[in-house]
Image (cartoon, rainbow, N blue to C red):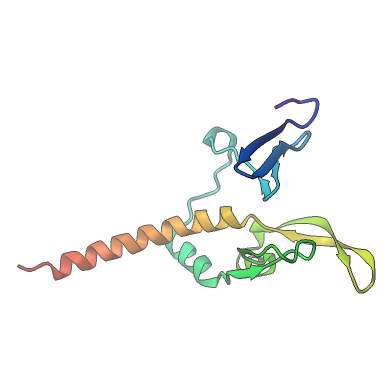
Length: 150
């Protein structure tokens, strides 16, 4: 990657060519299937607030409402995830705000959403699913111990 501009890469996957590039001055890798944002995982660059408890994780996973959706600018590309409003109702700290714009076909103009809500659904799913699965594995193990023949 170059600090002077985006590094563009391509690869050939049969008859379909694909592309990716780093956005200049950022840490986002943009692909023809969407953006990938690598995250620094080293504890030395984090202020760890606390671990997520099993009870907190169960509450979050129970409250999430997974949806199938398409962005208004790519109506034929179905995706899965969560709405920022759903996540915000569960934990306001997981929502970021940014100006968003979307083309309104009826008004034939670009609509600016000043307080657009943004979440990282992969981050939310991964962080909250691990404690839930750990709890389920522990409970299954405890139940298996109870039903073992004497």
